[in-house]
Length: 234
Image (cartoon, rainbow, N blue to C red; front, side, top):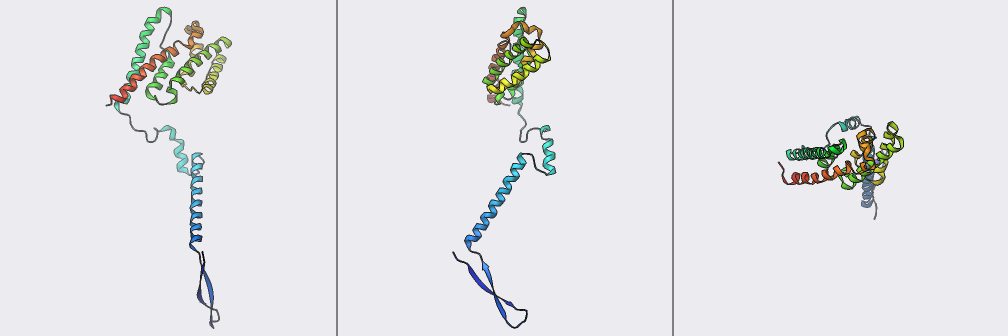
């Protein structure tokens, strides 16, 4: 490694002679070091921009305005579903409610009912978003059984009213987080039991019926819906 110096003539102010001024030419290794340093600096600046963009701290007006309305638009890159992806989940929901209604007719003399509002939400989760955590069988049954039992306990301790609803719902959310069984439709089971006088006679049997029992039927229908979606597309 060496540095070259070249003399460059430069006329003096008096015009009598000239003096030599050294011109330093950097070596190849020095140039390479400078280029690497500039590249690293550019990378660090770009990483910093990406991090601030991910945290939502970008000062640009365009970025801020787009993030405000992002939740009001369809997911970016989401394609329009084909007709079969619409028909089969809808047909599955129709079949599920029809079967639950038929079971209601059979159970009517005993004062029981299988058609409850949370099972409609379960249909939407199982048939339209089967790959999400909420549609996992573990999440569904753990949440349905646990949240229903919590609702019965809250009613037993606090009686009917706002305190039982508040305590029951809060306990359900804590239970689902603790068991890692997030299943949003199950959060309505305590409220349904506390406000549903016709369900009070079930007591802790409510933990298995109608929520968990209905989910068994819906899980079977889900398998049929998924098979049709995969093999009969149009």
